[in-house]
Length: 157
Image (cartoon, rainbow, N blue to C red; front, top):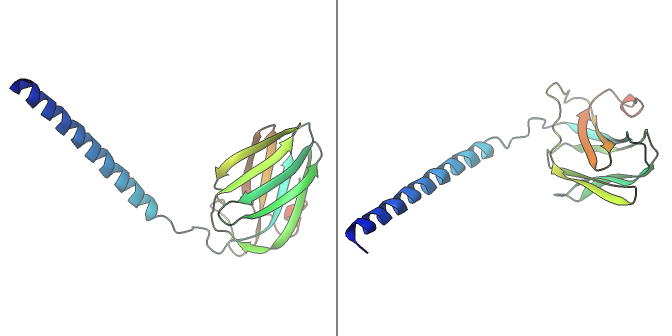
């Protein structure tokens, strides 16, 4: 290898190393920013119910909201088309842990994968809230935290 090729190869490696180092520093800075925001903004919020809405034209069965980190779950057996299932449970602290929704519909098992349900900014930490899961189409579901008063939160459509 000629001297010129060695110098070019060295400069390429050094340039690549600089880019890798810069990328690593950006990742560390981003992770540090995430770590500094781990405080739960809704600390003190209590959840005491679950509503699972089936907005589709097909039956839903074995609908479940699972918190994988703890293994805690709430479920409903069968929900007719354009209907819902609602249940209450003893108040539990909202932790901001990811949840996963699973259900069966038309012979297929569906799952949302893990995601975090964020409470609205105007949530009243002095009142319990419910989680509303909406199955809007086969394979499509989401969830929100809402507060409409107790026990009417489970009674409105």
